[in-house]
Amino acid sequence: MDAGDNADARQGHPISSDAWEKREMREALASRDISAVYRNLRKEGISQRQIAALTGQSQSEVSEILKGRQVMAYDVLARIADGLGVPRGYMGLAYDEATEIQVVGAADEQQAEEDESVKRRNFLAHAAQVTMGAAILGSSPRAWAASPARTPAPGHIGMTDVRQVEAATRALRALDYQYGGGFCRDAVVAQLSWGQQMLDSSAATPVRSRLFVALADLHSLAGWTSFDSGLMDSARGHFANALELAKQGNNDHLVANILYRMGRVYLHQEAPNDALKLFQLGQIAAQESGSELAISVLAANQAWAYAMMGNEDQSLKLLGLAKDEFARANVAEAEDWVKFFNETDVYAMIGTVHTVLARGVDTKHTQYAIPALTRAIDAYGEDMQRSKVFNQAALATNHLIEGDIDHGARIGRLALESADGIKSARVKDRMVPMKEEAAKRRNNPDARDLDERISSFFAA
Image (cartoon, rainbow, N blue to C red; front, side):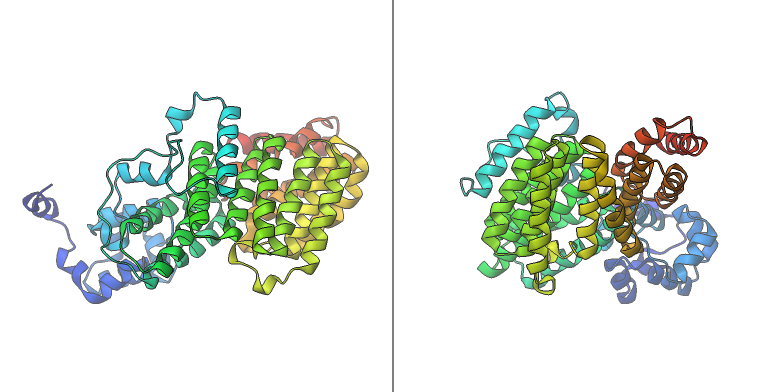
């Protein structure tokens, strides 16, 4: 579209293109402060009704935003920009379909025919190469992502540019914890489309090293939110890119983090053998980093994998190691990625491992799972809503196994209520054990009601 087309497109638009060039407006757009954007529009004489009509929002939504409600969802930001006539680049939203394919690493349809076990083996081989130092950035023989033309990169970058990537990653990760990967994945992808370009920019050696780590962390978040959205091939591609960048940045902490997260993907896919191998690779990186907290995380997840394999002795041994390493760890001085693993998460992992053992090995494990899960649930705040739902579902499962059906059903209903609004494909999957235990006891009215409620939730 040329300049004449743009001019024609704006004829009759109530907002002059000059409005977007004012300093206050440009600052508000750059920070995606939609509340400030709307306030500036009101100063321009644009009514709430006009803003609502242009953006497809209700007047009450516009009013709430004017009062300070934040807008974070990428699709909503894009709709607002297009409706108001804002150049997308002013809000950092300027990426096209080709770039999205580049940064998502999502040749999902092309890869769908490949057997999942083959994909797992390929990733495991790649992870082993990178972790053990056999791979160099860009040397992977596998095409983890398509490679269309890319937007020209900035000529030179400094530490400030890298800090912007880091700050965006922290903010987006907080949204993932609270609302689920489906809520913020598109925003993560958009941020990657900007950050990835900087790999082609000139930079001082310390800046470039930190950029590798920052982009590795952002790719890791993209992988995690893709996984949480049910996009397994996209997740695998992002984690592969993250692993190489983290290794290139000589950050063993982050290598351990990425291997832990990809191992969790395989646990979710009920492939504990493959997950265990990734956790063990991650343990090597964690030990190289000298982080007791990272070692604790990897040990706890190995315990989970062994529990899924029915190996009670090894599971309890690794769980003990996780608790011991956590007791030795200095959380305040730990790397940012692993600070999520606090005392609450330790109890959550203890409860999770014993829940798996209670279902597959011996029901006696409910006596350890229930107090640990209860303590975790009581400690989770609104910023960890997804984790709270996972633990409520597990707690309900244990009470059903114990025969305390009315109490289990009540907690199960709380889990369903807490899950409302969370955009995560994993929520339903983590409720499957609760549903299976409720279905076994359908002769009880409380269990039958819970089973039916879960079925309705799954169907929604």
